[in-house]
Amino acid sequence: MSGGKHEFGVDLGLSWVSPDVGNSRVRIGTPLAIRVGFVPRGRLMWEPRFALSFDSEGLGSAAYAFTPGVAALYSMTPTRHRAGWYLLGGAGMNFLSLGVPGGNSGTTFSFGGGVGMRKRYGNAALRLEGGLQFDTKDASAGIPSQFSVGTRVGLSFWH
Image 1 (cartoon, rainbow, N blue to C red):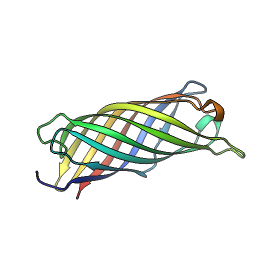
Image 2 (image 1 turned 90 degrees about the horizontal axis):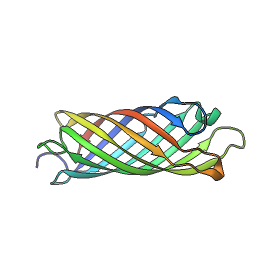
Image 3 (image 1 turned 135 degrees about the horizontal axis):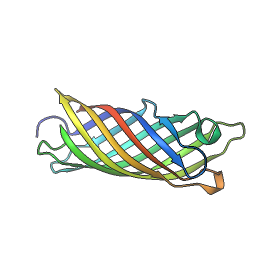
Image 4 (image 1 turned 120 degrees about the horizontal axis):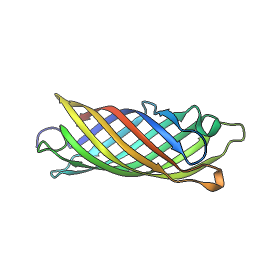
């Protein structure tokens, strides 16, 4: 196996969000989505992820979210996790803060899946992902559940 044992990456995301209360909208994730993959010998790779996002229209006001999570990537190509197509599924926790004075904060869970690909350039790769995500609600904080369809673009490096 050539290359490193860990894949490090930074991503930028864009998604269409449809909450069960309120209007649908587009959300842009900040370039602070960081991931670390543990490159295996087989086709299944585990990847902890940490994302920070800002939603300028979250529930009628600005909202911030910190989302730690874990994803499983299953390589669809013989080159394993250096280049090519993969399937992904994952789960995470969303720590939310609504930006209104005296605004609510709460915690929800997210579940999702999708497909991605890597295009290798030396010891780095361009990485593109597309997928679906469902976030649970936090009724005590007034945060509705929501469904998202989105894409993510990023760079990966191996160490």
